[in-house]
Image 1 (cartoon, rainbow, N blue to C red):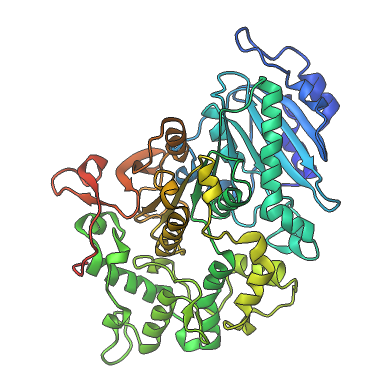
Image 2 (image 1 turned 60 degrees about the vertical axis):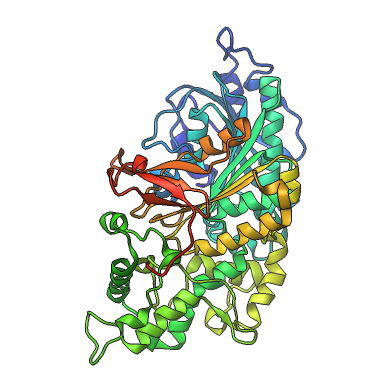
Length: 537
């Protein structure tokens, strides 16, 4: 999120101003059309007496006039696969009441939030939009989609500004325990309660349903909300939640760490591409081979040693060291004392995204360096796999880890939809294990309240050769409002704003199987089936 100073030029038009007095004056004209009367005008929301809250913007944004600031996340969040409503393209926003505020729950807190409320055709529902990476900016693209769909929406920067040097990555946690609390859960919860208060004041009624949608960090935020504040949301969509995050970030450091200490384990991109091609040839179905991804990675039994060079190293084989490196990446980091895998490595079929270059993964490094160990000079190459993961978990786990007991959320009536791509660096089999543990803990209460979708060919939250674009918002609303569980969703592959292929996404453990007759590019040619994994793949 750019600093307030840097936003001034972008906001200096008739519908955007940082001066509250001017904003109030600008919206003092009646905002509402006949038949759309509101309990409180947009301007009057500035007079709300909310604890620890400073309003910075209260204004009406006219239809089609919103222009989002361009941030480092704009490209990612604008991708069709990240569109919460599954839209191939983005449209203009309707007229809405925009409220921006800074929350100060502690003396060291500065949590920026925005709440947008449609002036017309509000559907009676509220959407909280999750963050990405280390957060630090408002998720305007998700807010735009939500308000276009008729939702009142809210977003937060989680209490720090990533456009500043001290706000980039995890640096903001260094010596700031209250900011760490804000980042972990307080910002999301207070954003939610503040938004609900403003919605009630503006419309004269509470939102009938509240939904959370986010991926990556946003997925973890959703799980934390379900755990800590089970009544905040009626439906949560948690994409690729990195939980437990200490263990996941450890896995992200693993390949760089092992290849740093043993340069023989460094592998070129070309050799990983060779491995990926061999895996595809051995395990992909005709559909997967045509479309460029592995359909059912957990049924693939191809091993890197099958490519072992018989004589000299060539571009068509793997050396013994390269085989060892690939095997260790698949396995994930190991506690050599307990012989337990700390977090499993990525799934078969994702080799094109592997890296073993002796370098640290920056996002993961920041968790250990700043949030866990509070030491900007911590040397990641000294990481002790037998002890340091436990130490980091002791420091950061109480704030960021979510156990497998979400029963209070389900008892509240909450619905939880998790999704993840098979080509994500986060192995979906790990998330399936978590899903089963949560289901077991909740017993019968979770049967119709939790689903997991694993998506062939999709990367981290979006992208890849698979069909990554589907309506998370439609799925969760249909589930909460009409009790229709998302056992099958239709996803699309979008290129240049056009749908080029569709495919059903099946609730785990079911998979989409081609009927052998229809078009491979048409979801109608597939059925969701549950089967025993066989050795044929």
